[in-house]
Length: 289
Image (cartoon, rainbow, N blue to C red; front, top):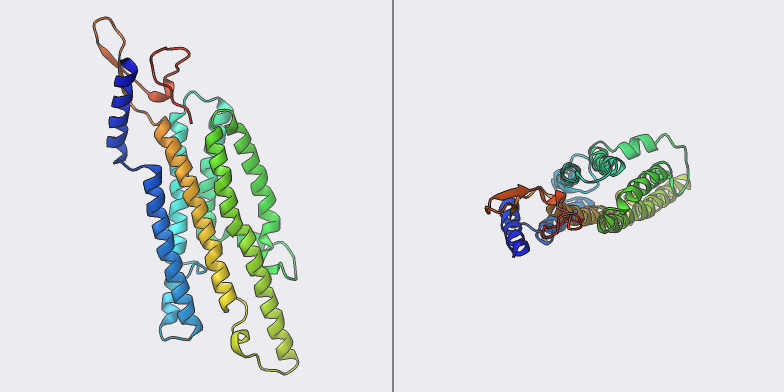
């Protein structure tokens, strides 16, 4: 009876505090935003390739490949939000060990760093220090940042695994999707871009005039436009997976006052959900992530 009362109270309190928003609902909102941004980017790029009047203004505002654009703002904001959400989880996981709490904080800082990187293009600026020519010239930052990121993520996931295996699995899945765009597709885009530039340079050297899509080398060709749209879309979908995992974790560890009768007089006392342990206090709820 006590468990049923506590469960009902927990459900009502959680719904009130989160406005009935569940991880699935949040995912629908984010995916809808991504679909709109990707479509706007493709349309603006196609118009620019066809030299439609004023298309440059649309390109600057909607292209996923522009730094000061709506998609960049979206990615920066959502990644920063992940940092805040992860920090919120950290505050409520009071029963974790010291190293686990540090790992949660490092994860939050990692998302904040990704947000800064999205806004300031740190990976391209610092990655530019790597000297590399050839087909991977435009993706050389991968050689520097990927090993560092992999090591940092492995350490964090290792420390979180014992207490939050579900979260770790979800974070890994999100990372695979995110890196599929940030590393995999971007590497392909960089190779295509380098080949287009090389081909145009060859034609100019022999005195020929590039025609068709070769007039638009580097970033200005349809292959690059579609590839970049796929790249950024995968990155944003990876963020959606992270949100689903972490928002669900947040709901499970959030401080919810669960009223339980603890005295013979029937007086009720509130307990934070993350402090309830069934093994030590029979009849109470437990919170696991």
